[in-house]
Image 1 (cartoon, rainbow, N blue to C red):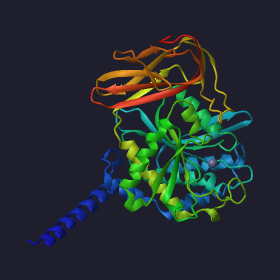
Image 2 (image 1 turned 180 degrees about the horizontal axis):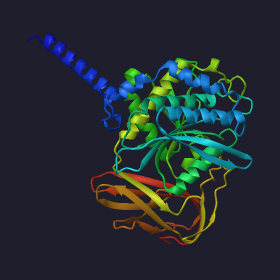
Image 3 (image 1 turned 60 degrees about the horizontal axis):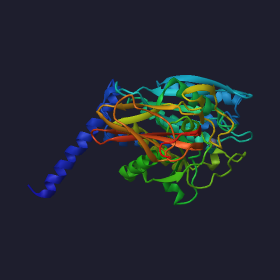
Image 4 (image 1 turned 180 degrees about the vertical axis):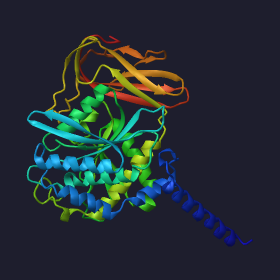
Length: 430
Ligand SMILES: [Zn+2]
């Protein structure tokens, strides 16, 4: 048989096999238990289409200005809830109040199917607007993306849990996400990554049309790097690249970061046309760019949700947002208004509290290393993994970073860190 004939036959088999696989999963009664493979991911990416994006935009923008606490904002929240419910997702309102504001976040969930994982990935955006703005791009674009993605993914389940959250209160001080993050932290939710979409619907340059930006602090760097890998893996159908940039504090991912989770703010490349003004209308949305940003975020989210987590280290104490005297938390802090100073989840200690970590890992733990300001201070190879915090060469006064590294016998490792304002006189080496 000629080589060319063999290739043709092989290709034919591949096409038939692919078609069978795809139609089989679509018609399958229980897609919740199927294996998510590359065919399914590519097909899901291709399910994102202009008419569904237009549908979500049209309905959301019908509510007009959606300033937090107004009837328009509330009606838009009801509509988002109903749409998530129509998709068959578990959906609930998360009611919050802060200062003069009272409102609701909408939370829709695809529970994870791996019994050994309590990990949660969040895809979020805000549905409230600035005082006089219809908020098409800010942040209708993010809301439209999470709804379109939720609709496509609603027939599946993945290893880890996915939560889609539409926040309110962003434009008045990111209070909806603050209250949610605080409560999630107190519940002990294992949120592994927060992907916050805010302003992803406009491009005016050729370069901008192919770029999406990830703003974040260094502990969340892995999310941007992972997204870059996904953009390369599916470049043929996404035609997008990811820019990995330093943090720009203040978006809805920030409260999660302040309470010890990892999270990124994801935004377009080009300027935000008509932002925070009456000009932020649907006419200024670039729908083909919105398609691309929605598609890449769908791909990143699925790939995260199926990726095994080999090891995870979580600092359990000191607690975020508490005032300590030695190892005793004596007061609840938080400073909700001071998010630009990054004081929301700050911890203040007088004396020496005990750092205690939880490690989630299927393998044996080799050791755990505690550090202050990236300087190695102690390793521990027996549980409980604990350390009575002190300085290394000098007393700790002011803001410092506690960072913990955990290593498995199989060579995997993970880190967790938190910022603490110390008043601690003792230190290891005088
Ligand atoms: Zn915004």
